[in-house]
Length: 397
Image 1 (cartoon, rainbow, N blue to C red):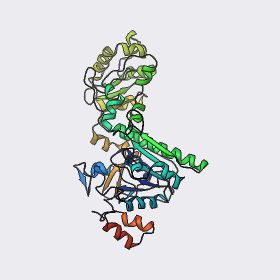
Image 2 (cartoon, one colour; image 1 turned 30 degrees about the vertical axis):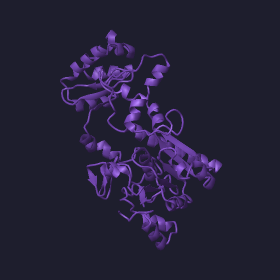
Image 3 (tube, rainbow, N blue to C red; image 1 turned 60 degrees about the vertical axis):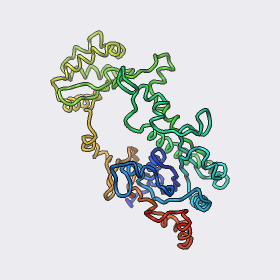
Image 4 (cartoon, helix red, strand yellow; image 1 turned 120 degrees about the vertical axis):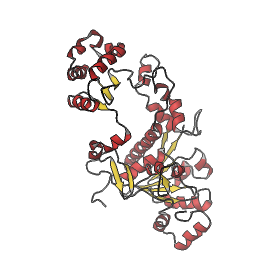
């Protein structure tokens, strides 16, 4: 232990979720002290096989989502498996699952049933579209939601085809929304003593990301379109070529634009009628790009970015993955962590008094099954019987 209490010490989470959204959220809870018990089906979480590359018994994809958890496996299709889950929930605060809506109901484990037995339990469901409505109960996947929520319609080069964002942003944000919902429900439970149902749907999360495009439409703007790296409302706000590495400028006001022109050695540019304010710059975006890149073509991108951000002009070099990992500020912000042979991305949430702690690497399949069942008071004979019936698999099997 690190000698301090974590924010969620004493909170137990039963994590039945698989793949990305749910596991991402429960990893956050575990990083801040919750006792997260990851319960996998006998076949294991699908992402254990989503490689190469692989580390130990699972793909790197699985390792990126499942630290700070204990792991066991349980066949919930069998009556003994359901009974064992209910025993586990006796001492739990939170249940997280991402079964297709209707699955737990079919197994006799609906929210209503669980609420009657565990009134303080917070039941969080991660789903594609929610349980009802025109798309209720249908399966949802990150890329599909990117397409349906409008994200792909605004992502890509001007005049090009809609493009999927190159990371599972909807799944990740849904996992974070699940964490927000769970912590809100835990806080409210302190007043009421009651748990509640928390839902985080990929469809809702995808729609929530459509800023500023939805507000632009709400207030009479044109249909959003793909603009590549350019911002629909601000200029200059995109990637620009330099003599070496490209840089991204994010100039949010005219004061910053004046400073930009001064650093580039062309102060008169800010007085040009085409560029005197943001509206004028948006209307002359191509001419602005030409003028700025002409001034930048003799400059080193990294040095220019350092000079600009030091002068209060938001700017950064466009870095490749290995460059990001090697950046000294990445290390300074404690965004790279190691637990033995495990390497991972640190938590972006910084708490001054109860910070995150990283003590458990991702569990091997069913690694902590016997430990968890012993804590529940199950005798070795009963554990052996459950294993013989296939309710729990062989450890490491």
